[in-house]
Amino acid sequence: MTLDSTFTRIANRVAHAAGMPASFIACCLVVLLWAISGPLFGFSDTWQLIINTGTTIVTFLMVFLIQNTQNRDGAAVQAKLDELIRVTAASNKFIGIEHLTEQEVEEFRLRCERAAKRKVLETPQALTDEW
Image 1 (cartoon, rainbow, N blue to C red):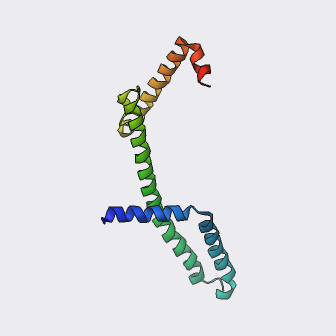
Image 2: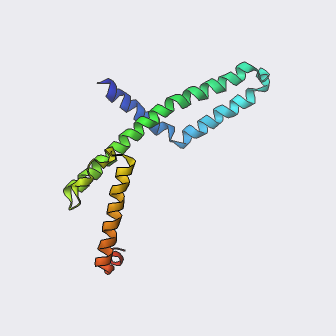
Image 3: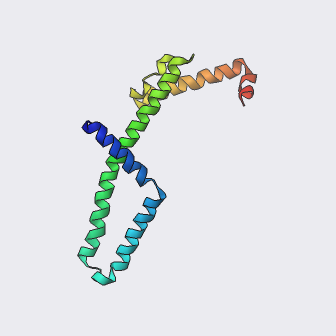
């Protein structure tokens, strides 16, 4: 098993677990227990450092796990869209436009919008037929 596949498997499990209601409740309970324990520790610097360090580390690691998950999800959706474009009468020019600049993608979007408006003007009933 490669490092990449191991990381992907772990990232999927952690991202899934982090999104569960039980995870949120558990985090709330940790914060509540920490707050309740404040008087026992005299609201000391160490007491504050515990929650600060813990939450900072968790946040730091979660950023990378979430980004990894988002990257894979985005790539998978893009691959599915590319395949739909490829197998239908849609223009294959759209395959791979996610690699263009934001301005170039906007130009494609505007061309699509203009083409759709022309189509509606050619057949005004076409828009209402689809609803």
